[in-house]
Image 1: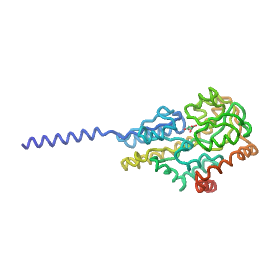
Image 2: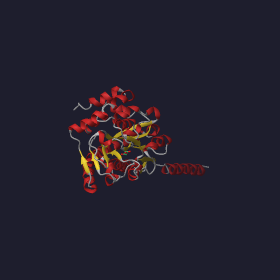
Image 3: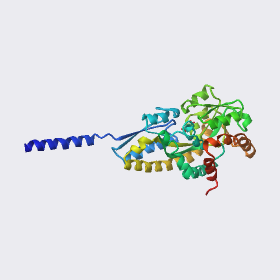
Image 4: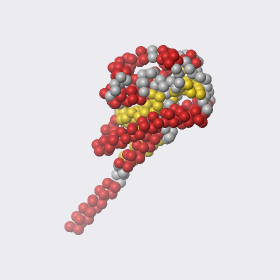
Length: 330
Ligand code: LMR
């Protein structure tokens, strides 16, 4: 009898040890649309390396770059369905989900990256990370990308030069309005299709960061670039709130620390790449780059600043005011 009891206890101990060993690590599938060798691509990789190092055997991260798994217009639904756990769409991709986030799309609002960061790190910017909570999505970090520049096969010095051109744009109502105001057409299109659309003449102009222009080879297709820097292509790292809140406390806090480390590196890289990729575009593409003088810049501002008015109610005047105020804080 005693021997039987001892055997039963031993069996139970062995079974529980086996099931503990078999406990699956938490899987985080990180889906994004850009090349691996871009600030966001490097950031996703770095998140994987640091998260797995911090939680060996407890966290596994799989990164799916270059729209391998989802386009940005599918990925937020995919997060809610549990098909992926993390994504980092550009802020212009949240149009359908959170109108206040359109503040990031407003032309000529953020003067420079410091201005953008002060807003993102302030009270309102931090609240905006939570703005999709009622829909089950949670922002967990902002990452930098780069200021947008325009490109085409004709010089775009003033808004009149863009008339009748067809621009590929991100799916933002603000961008759509911008281009219709200058009698151009803005066609929202998934990032993965841009280079082909330019090649096939579906669009004959576009706007993006230097890093994305270089990575997609646009510099081999378009000869003229205008450094308008009218809006900033930044990202929100986003996850499903059920997934994030369901993580063990130590893992969630640990991953938040990792995200801070990654943010610092992505932002450093984005600043470095803005210059470096621009230089490569010139060296490899032999393209013409124009930085508008004060008069030409004013013509773009005159055309695009009135766009703000149409979005003030949707975004919320207090959000716009906070963004403007962040420009004068030091
Ligand atoms: C785009 O669609 O042009 C960008 O948002 C892509 C990206 O993620 O940088």
